[in-house]
Image 1: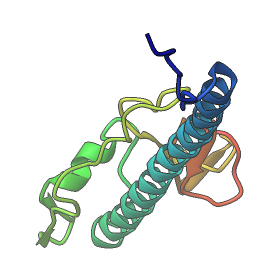
Image 2: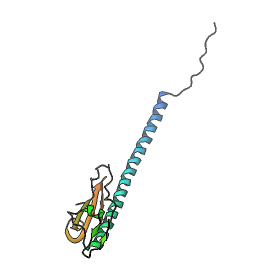
Image 3: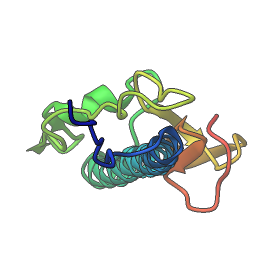
Length: 150
């Protein structure tokens, strides 16, 4: 009978496997954090573009009608044809009123806030208006530099 000789077995040790799994976990955590941050910046960018569009539409409505929409009329009046005091029709100034982006932490509201005859910060100011929303820890406002949304 000949003695069996065992060839040296090749493979990875448990420690090597644990190190590889730990490295993959760290890389996955970094990638996830970057992905979440990109999504939040995307929602902020969309909300900023929407507020600028809404502010421009309010300006166009005001130029045609001679006054800004009332708070009661809200932003919905921008998506309708408007007839001014001289009988001239114009509009709609928007195809549809945009909604804030979904998701976020804290979540964005269901609609943009519009207040007529209001200055940034909430003080009464005839002829001025505020369009804003907040979410993801950001405040998007029709007036730059304003940190609150009434």
